[in-house]
Amino acid sequence: PRIHSITSGEADISIRAITINKIRKKEVLFSKKYYVDGIGLIVRKNSEINDLKDLEGKKILAHDYTTAHTWVNKKLKNSILVDKFEMSTPEKSLIMESFDAYAIDYTFLKEIERKHSDLRVLGKKYTKEPYGIAISKDRKDLQKKINKAIKQLKKTGELDQIIAEFEK
Image 1 (tube, rainbow, N blue to C red):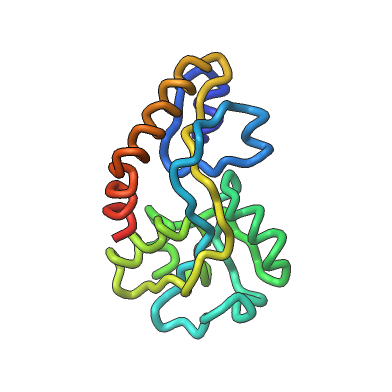
Image 2 (cartoon, rainbow, N blue to C red):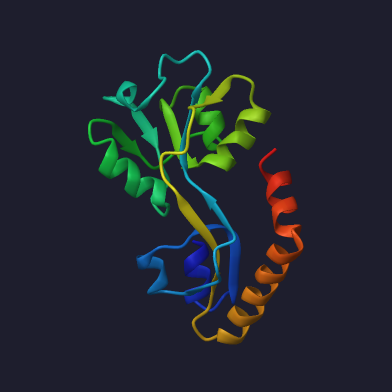
């Protein structure tokens, strides 16, 4: 949806947690990477799922527009991939046992874990995903300005401070 908002002309940029990859580069421009996250998995705290092998035959939610969806399809072939949830949020559906695990950005899952004591994130990032700001192909001027700002934030250490706060 975030890439579509740019290609449809609704927006010039999209900022939140967009993985830079070859497919998306065909659609939009990207800034220089500003963060590296990865796909993670969250399960119910009392679940017996502790690693990838425990997911065999289990239902895993991964939104169809994410890199997590592609990853689950490739890496967890003996699992059941679902891309719909019943409650107002994926984490509420997970708590209500609509599926067994939720795959998406690790850092985002850590935030969910902080808010829901009955959920836990499995121990690691399973991929390395560079994040960038997606930009309309018609706006190379914005790409230059954004890259200049990212470079400045890195140089001053402000980007590291923002990331440290984000990762708490």
